[in-house]
Figure 1 (cartoon, rainbow, N blue to C red):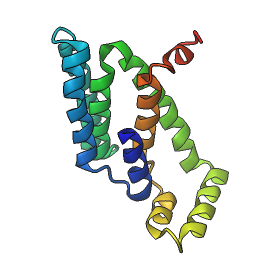
Figure 2: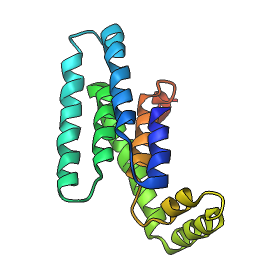
Figure 3: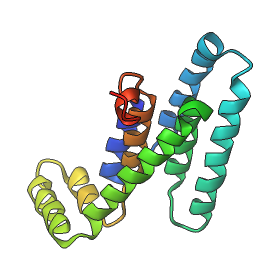
Figure 4: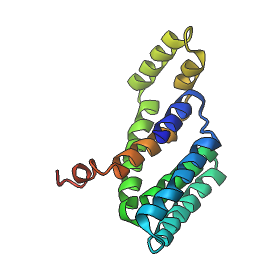
Length: 160
C-alpha cells in the first residue's frame, strides 16, 4: 500500500516524502528478522545497495528524483536477490510504458484534457498530471507490487 501512496504523491506533486520510504524500511526490519533470518539478510542489503548506486548515478545526472532513489532502494531491499530481477524488469517495462504517456501526442493531449477538468476541484492533482516530467514512482510501485506479491509471481514468470 505504501508503494501506491508514493505513486499517487509522485503523480500529484512529483515528490515522494521521506516518511514513505522510511516506513517501508521500518516494516522490512521485523519481516526480515521473522521470515528471512540473518543468513539471507546480506543478499537483500547488497541488492538494495546496487540499486541505490544505479539510481544515485541517475540522480547525479539529473535524470531521477531523490524520492525515486529512496523508494527503489527500499523496494529492492524487500525484493532481494530472489525477486530483484523481476522487480527491475517490471519497473523498467512499466516505466517505458509510462514514458510513452508523456511523449505520444494523443496521450499528451489526453493528460492535458484530464488536467483541465480537474483544475477546479483538484488543482494540485491537475498540475501534477499536466507536468511534463515522468512520475517514476508509479513504475517503481507497479514493479514492486507485481514482483513482491506472491500470488502474482507465477503469472509473471509465465507459469500460471
